[in-house]
Amino acid sequence: MAWFIGKGVDLVLLWVVSVWGCVVAGQVCVGPCNGGARVVWAAFLRAREEHADAVDRWVREGAKGEPPLEPVQPEVRWRLGDPLVDGRCRATTRRALLEVDALAAVVSARGDGLRPASRWSRVSGSRPRPAVSPDAELLDVLVGELLEFEDLAREELGCAERVRGSRSGLARSRSVAWLVEQLAGVLAVEGLAVVSSLRPAEGEPMHLVEWSLGWEERLRLMVEDEPRGTTPARCRCGERSLRWDARVGFFVCGACGNHVSEVEERGLIADEAG
Image 1: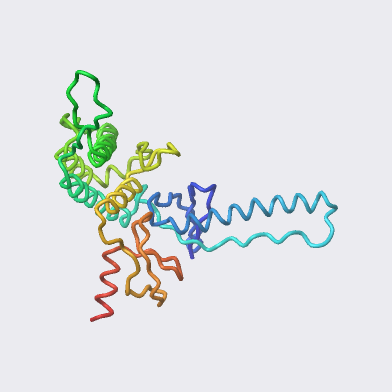
Image 2: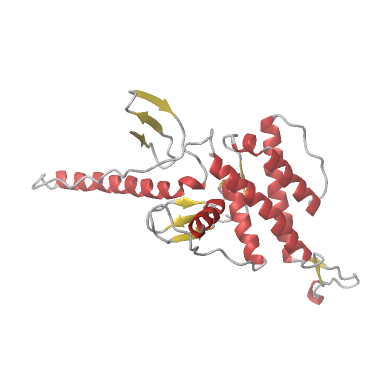
């Protein structure tokens, strides 16, 4: 039997294996595969804080009657990182990065990157200049953030600096190719994150896993690609309630919370059909 003891919402955990009577220190995967478990554990921590406040009120009021019931600690299954991100989330990140490159190419091909100059922007005596289109501006931001990831990763891994140049489609594809090739080492770097336009209000750095998933979803909506939804695949719990969750990059079962990747989803359909 194995279980985990969490400390705070960041969930730096100890893995306790009672069969052998030993304790092995480990950290849960920081990727999306533990998203459902984090929600459950965070709810338990909030309930525990509310219980502590209720006990304080009960004591102040004379401790009459039975004390407030303590919340039951949920049985949560965690996936350990390897060392920070497990194999499922590495595969998810690899797929999302390649999708970001492909979708960005589609967005770029929709126009020449320019839009006609407005007559209101013309200064007397000057020639009007075309302005950069919103699509081009967005892709420029995307490539900038992608190159920042690559620069930080190269520095942390002790690799040579990348070839400098403009934020072009070629630079984007080269950066994606390098990150995908070095992905195991890149995702093993603790604290590797950049501030992204995906979260302009929060200003908190994003890790590569959630960054790639966020940009994939944003670009997919721009090209009006078919959104993923439900699937006829049957979850391991027996229910057909799997629905795609773009925030975690998995199909999530509405009945049991199980996470199923795209490859696994296709395999489930094939197995049942066969």
